[in-house]
Image (tube, rainbow, N blue to C red):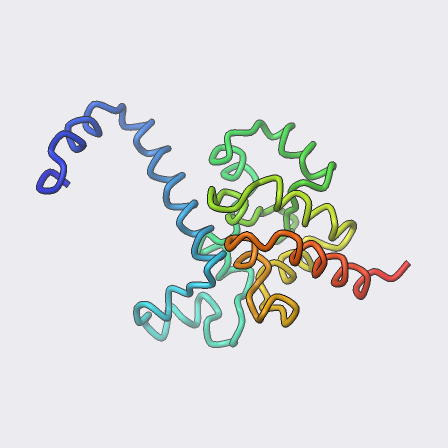
Length: 182
């Protein structure tokens, strides 16, 4: 860093270690969220050892909960609160109002890191989550991260990233109607 931006390096050195650590962690989780949105898999970028792939479940053809946590695509409730800057009470209210959702892993709530991606308007995500209604967190996760033919084979996250809010809302309403007929 000092080679490219000596002033920036000096500014970073003035930040207390704890604050710098918080900023760094937030940046890491945000990048993981963006990787989810853009559907970028680490294993497509670099080779992992066979043992590591087995540990993360990469050989199963789809992401396992352990792999999603290990790659920071899902983050624990306490970490999510810290990174998003909300109190646990506010996060619970957002979930109750169906503006956010979580998935349960071993009876613990985990939140998608894509909620932290600044390139997608939080209001747009909230409208889609609300449209999905009372579906389970895992059903909502699958909706957001699975390519959809109604969206030209983009995932709903990718479509939101590119600004196709109305199309994503229509796809969400259709997805909810099929999964939860009333």
